[in-house]
Amino acid sequence: MSEPDAPCQWLDWDSAFFGWRIARVNGDRLDAARLAAVDAWCAAQRIDCLYLLADPADPATIRLAEAGQFRLQDVRLTLAITAPAALPPPEPAPERVTLRPARPADLDVLRETARHAYTHSRFYNDPHFTPAQSAALYDTWLTRSLTETGYADMTFVAEVDAVPAGYIVCHLHPATRLGVIGLVGVVETARGQAVGQRLVLHALDWFWQQGMAGVQVTTQGRNLAGQRLYQRCGFLTHSLLLWYHRWSTETPRS
Image: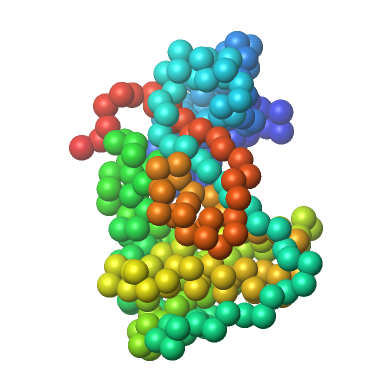
């Protein structure tokens, strides 16, 4: 539906999943002419919801977005770490914590964590998306990561006393030698036992073994616990962008 030079991109998956006509602004900056083109494109395509990932370093973009009825939904924080010159020896894991590749059978234990662990996200923050839809989004993400070949390059599971207690989803971008952490989740009853840290460190070791030069992970600006986890593992802030949503109606579905 979107032309190569169109101001926006139609989002097939989001539209089908949420049941709204959803698109995203191409690029992270706006000027008056570009906003007019965005408005015209959305009117022609009958867009219900438009995402904008905006650069906060450009005040004009923020002013135009707010004047153009975009609503701030999230602060998107990306953290990064560079591969060490030499791989450090793996740290010994606590005896009760073991790490292994995920199996489809792990879903029975882990999917409830995926459904409730990401309430800081922009989808939960936007009242047009119901909590049930937002929970199903992350449930679907984890399910596909564990069951679909090629959806994730690797998913690891941490076990505590031989019971699945957490997961981390990993993606490889060989062309840029960049690894990306998708989802990280720890079962509520296993928190406070360094399970999240063990998962991240284990994933980093795997990324370095795959020849990646760096790893990035994205989290929410209000997810302080997540930020502290990655900082403890050596990540530093890489970029900060703002997620805006603009709706054709101000009235959420009941």
